[in-house]
Length: 474
Image (cartoon, rainbow, N blue to C red; front, side):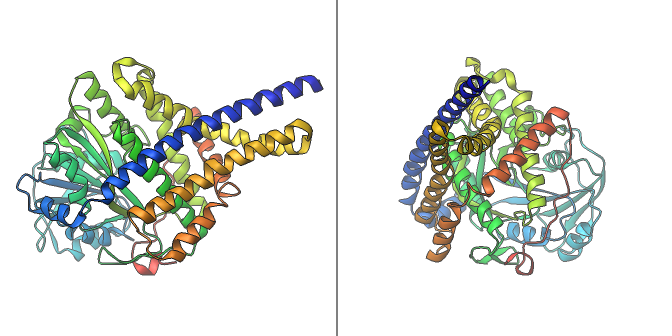
């Protein structure tokens, strides 16, 4: 019996070691590519680029679609930020998805709206429309009030009502910098339409001072849970997505801030109303459409345009969010599983899908097993003790050091948090990630896997505090 246990411990120890080594190598390569790309962007004169984009006659008009459901806490600041955007031609479509709070009344009163009629192209099937409003003081601002059908249904409604060839999806709890839209549209405008979709950078607004949809002062939140999410976002967006985007391999661009070609999205069937992760699902469908029709189109991520979004401030809400995200990831991968290792889909099928299956999908199961293995190995002693130390060092390298590298990359290239003490605090807190934050997120993502297997479908109640100073400074 002891011999069996010995061989099992050695087998699982070697398996976890090989897996973690593989992940570290992949992340190291991504870090190098991210560094090179950010170094190239660092040399650009951003102000000149912004002015050229704004004044360019070839800048394509954009419909901004904002799905909202019970967003009374932050929708006003969000709309103000969209009205402040510096871009030649836009329209703003707020899609109220059957809110039961005061969202509609707030928007109608704040922006002096009146009920009107407006025709829509019935390209995508959606829930019925209850009323349409237009702002008297901002004629480009519209509110479409519809019956509840979910975020994907609200986005499809916005696509039906949009009049421009590109649309930008923006969450109702998010705000954009004044140049965010011009920067996220730059790849599309520069490529003469050969870029099908672009995702922007997402940052956490908790701790910042927001007035009328504008970030007045950047500072770090006092809450360790929020700061850990900031670090996590930096690692995900500045490392992973920059590298994958360079080779047109990105499968996820955030639904909180992304631009799409309307015609391609309609041809792909729009947002899927039957999946939890509608943003990833749409990107995968676009990749599939592009490959199957041999289109010369790309999907990119741009690190510079910033969208500020509200992050969960409690463990309970964060748990629901991460569980839902992971379940949506698995649903999308499973729905398009035949693309995996299929040469017909090029590097998307031969690299992106295997990477997302191995690292993003089943990674939490293996990593959580690694934590359990380390604890057991420490108690068993002998050769297992050496395995435990080795795996612990790998966990620290994988978790903390890559986080520190991402923080330094951000401080050097984008400098969102200019105060040195904020950067130092993030670096110190990132060293504790493997002790408490990482195990929690692994458990929550494992719950997402279980929910997928049990076919449970629940968004959960995502309580909003609001974007203004009174809600999020601390």
